[in-house]
Length: 394
Image (cartoon, rainbow, N blue to C red; front, top):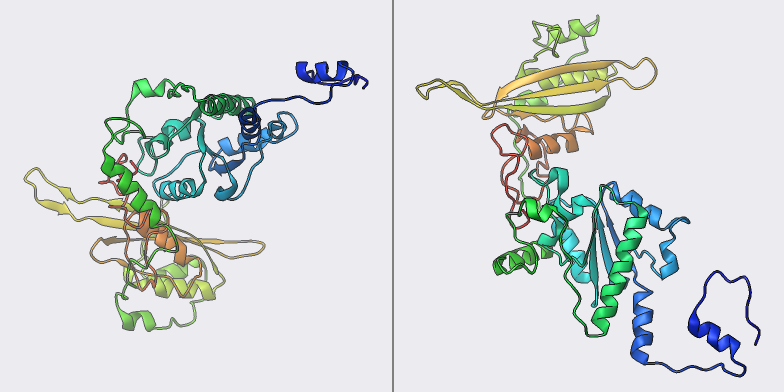
């Protein structure tokens, strides 16, 4: 048997077998063979949610080529060994991540890639962010960075191989320590395997994860129209003239230079239909803001709680024009929905309801769209704390 030349690797056992005439058989322990196979076939289930996901993808490219250690990416949790969480996890996403983790067969491992997955990083004190995935998943390896480069993820996978070998040999594998952020601040929600963690939190997270199967039920009943008779009235043909004349015909008296004109609430649908007939067929955006009530020193309300909603329409095609206006109303009054006039009003109004709490009368499916269905409060209101908790995830 001739020794091969120009090889890119060397192995003492392989070289010895090649250099010894007649030696083509070697013996070994089956357990070591299985350990070798397990550590060199760690299939990854990706949970890439932000910029760390780009670095994760680059790890599979030719420069690093994570496939050389037998690691491939699988799109199903039932055929994966390692979950790589690369990016920020929100309170709405957390139960989905935990459910996918529970679907992975044993033995399985978890790798936290990047500072957002490790601790929440910039967003840890904001209402939608989980302050580290180790508050609901047992993390085996931390790969710090913002974002960590492909070589760092490769080093993390090599570290995971070492831990797997130690576990297979029945030896003690040292616990991975969270990076220096662990010494700076402790999340209000204790981490997995923390002795101070309340066991009820584990059960609450499990119950929440089990509820994500299928679609959420319609939690908000269709909102009745503010005035059914007024909503059914069809606007006559728009007035001749420019946009300003059309707005004046619908109750606009002032045109400030630093803000869109203020339209009476009861003329919203009339104005929207008139503009649509004039060619403004695209609803670009619906943006709401909140103004809490004001009180004097004696505690008497001087100005009630109000909402302000701005609308932008656009004419498609060349020479596109914009039409902008705003409404101001109290929280009790609400505002009519543009659902049925513009297709884009469906999700945009749901988003403003979800974040601000604006009630759009006549919307047939006014329920949350960004936050969990059981989230308490409306996070972009001025009276809502930016770091509000959301049990059992933060």
